Amino acid sequence: MNTDKHGLLATKRHEKPQKLNLRCREVREHLAEWVERSLAAQKRVRIEEHGAVCGECGRVLKEAREGEARMRGLFLTAADSMHVRPAFEGKLVRALRAGAGAASEAERIGWFGLWRFGFGVAVGVIFLGLLVWRLEEQPGGSQAFATSEQATVQSPSRATVAYVLPDYSFREEGNLVWDSITYRTNVLDLTLWAQRKSETKKEL
Amino acid sequence: MDQERFVAALRGGDAEAVRELVEAYGNRLFRSACLLCGNQADAEDLTQETLLQAMRSVERFRGDSNAYTWLHGILLNLTRRHHRKRKWLVFEEEAGQDETAEQEEHGHGVDRDAGVVALTEALKKISGAHREILVLRFYEQMKIAEIASQLGISKGTAKSRLFYAVEALRKLIPAEMNLFGDGGTEEKVSTLKG
Picture 1 (cartoon, each protein chain N blue to C red):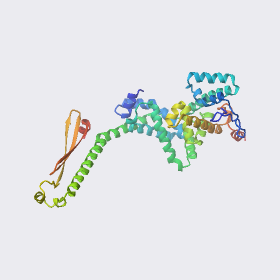
Picture 2: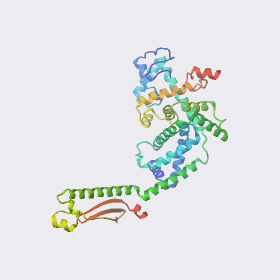
Picture 3: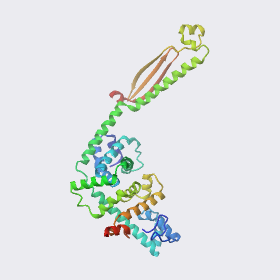
Picture 4: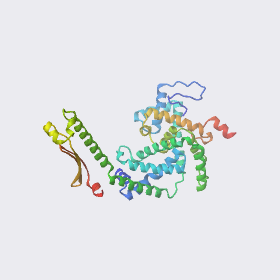
C-alpha cells in the first residue's frame, strides 16, 4: 500500500507524489471498503476492472488484500498466544455474581424511589415556604404570627400558617405501592404521592 | 448468546446466564484487552471491570448494536481511563518487564513466534488511538463503518486514522517479516542487521 490517505502515490518521502487520474484516485479512496468487501457491486466491479488494466492499481489492490490478510492473521495469532489463566473464567463468574448481589441490594433499598420521594418532599417544603411568604406579604400578614386569635380578630378572611404537620402513609394496589406524604396545616393540606413496585416495598 | 439471555445475565438473576456470558465473551474481551493495554494482569482487571460496568449500565443497552460490540465499547473507555491513570508511570518499561516475567513464569515466552513478539512490542510504542483502530480492524475484524460508529468518528477519519496507524506499525515491524508486502523501514532493517 504505497498510497497516502488522499490516494496519491508516494514512493519515497523526498519524491513529489505522482498525480493520479480519477479512476486511480477512486481505487485509492475506496481501498479499505474494497478489501472488506463492503462496496456496492457496481463500484466494486468498476474498481476491479480498472485494476485489471492499470498495472499500479492492480498491484495496490493485490497488496492491500494480502496485507489485510497477513495483519489479521498476525493479530489473531498474537491474541491466541495470550495466556488465559484457567481460573480466570471462574473469577469472572464470581465477580459478576457478587456484582449482581450489590446491584440487587441497591434495588432493594430503592434508591430511585427514595430520590423521587425526596424530590417530592423538597417540592412540598418549597411550596409551603412560598405559601408562608405570600401570607406575610399581605397587609397585616407579619402580625398574623402573633397569635391565631389576634389574626382572626384583625382579618378573619386572611389565613395564617400556625403549624405544619408532615404525615407519611402508603397503600398497596395489586403489585403497586402508593407512597404519600401530606403536609397538614391549619390553612390547607398538601399531599404528594409516588408510585413504585410492591416487591421493593415488601423487602423494605 | 441471544440478547434476552445477555440482558438476563447482566441483570444477574440467572446464574446459568452469567456463566454463559463469561464463556461467550470473557476470553475474547480479555485477548482484546491484552492487545489494547499490553499487559495480561491489567487485561484481566479491565475485562472484569468491563463486565461489571455492563452490569451496572444494562438499562442503557438498547440492542441496536450487538452485545459484544457494546461490551467492547465499554472496554475501550476503560482502557483509555487505564492509560490516563498510568500516564505518570513508565508504562512501556514496566509493562514490558511484567509481561516478560509473567510469560516466562507460565512458559509461554518461547512459544510466541517473532512476528507476534514484534507486533506486541510495536503496539506498546504507538499511540492509543492508533492501537485502538488496529485492534478493531485486524483483531475484531470490524468494517470501516463499524469502526467509525464504535469510535464516534466519521468514515473518512476512520480510514485516514487506519492508514496512519498501519504506517506507524509498518515502521516498527522488521522488514524481514514481510507483513506489509514491501517490508518495514530501512532504519529498522539496518538496526536489525547492525
